Image 1 (cartoon, helix red, strand yellow):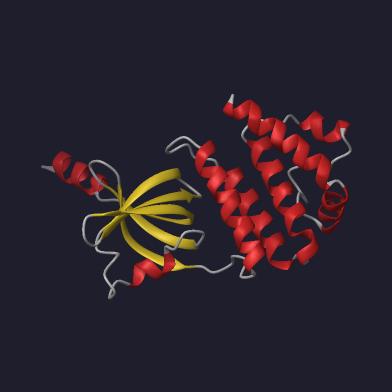
Image 2: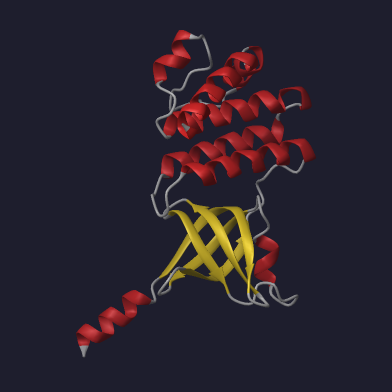
Amino acid sequence: MCLYYCHFRNMHHLYTTDAYVLGSMPHGESNRVYRLFTRTLGFVYVHGQGVRELKNRNRYALATGSYARVTLVRGREMWRLTGAVDRGAVPVHGQARQSMRKVLALVGKLLPVEDATPRLFTILEEGFAALRVTTDESIAATEALIVLHVLHERGYVPAYTSAQRGLPSLAVQHAFSRDALTRATRHHAAIVNVVNNALRNANG
């Protein structure tokens, strides 16, 4: 009896974690399946029961590109959503928000399911925080710098590449400092070249 109870309890353990919403698709009349990049679980597919109904408040926190605190439970086939709260903290400027969505779309293509990568999550947090305060002229360079760090974290850009080309440092700390962002703007074209070469290798 105790073994059954323990097994039953573990099956219904709730996980609360921060998440970026990479996208979603309708499932039935009022449900959606979400693609989330979470801090503790990595990239997961999550079933949202009834989130397309107007009375469901979760759907406002789960728009593509949102940053939310989600509560999940493991279902038989995929994770299920039990709650979501919008955490804000995303760029509100149109061009910066578009850059953020482009980065998240790339992350969704690079990650396997349920491969926890907390360092990558931190990179996105710090990079998107920089996007919120950057000038219009520096948005594209900041986006490129975020992608450079994402690709480095996933192993597509070695650290020496940055050092050899005089690009902003790929050091773990101060990755998006004012100095790093200034140098990213100065070396924008070089960063884009490194990023494009890495993406070609990743797709090849």
